Image (cartoon, rainbow, N blue to C red; front, side, top):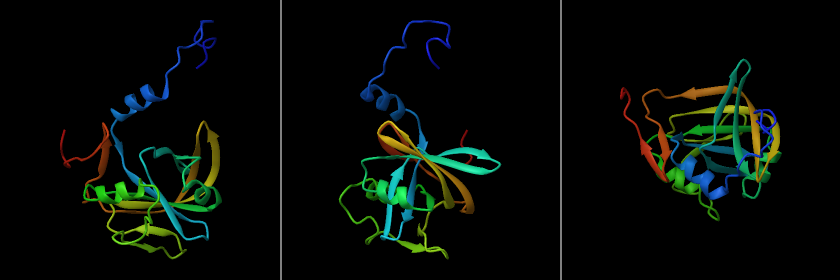
Length: 174
């Protein structure tokens, strides 16, 4: 909201990147790995920015850094797979967050869906989605994608990220 929309002509105080990151490190988020294959081999990255946008039509969004090695693959892909990591997959999250490594080499376990999209094995579930829009936002791109298929394993607890560390939760906790 602009200062004028808030009823004030004073500019809103700025927040620097370090403070912004510090605030969001305290916000727990689910951990996913987004995988793609834009006909140059599989690529993927760890993300905590996945958001359910709406149910009708089923749309999700996530951010990807414009400077990341995965960005050109996402930019050129028609579809993405959002892999929901289970609590037991911290090493997978770390591997897909690391630059300069072959993220799909051993010990990563993965396969291809019927349409050729790369999907990780042993996850808590996944979404297959068609890319609808790529929106430049600061040093990232916001990807908006329509979900076309899902697979969910209800018994697998999710991997969470909070305060710079990975965590798990117990089902049924209040």
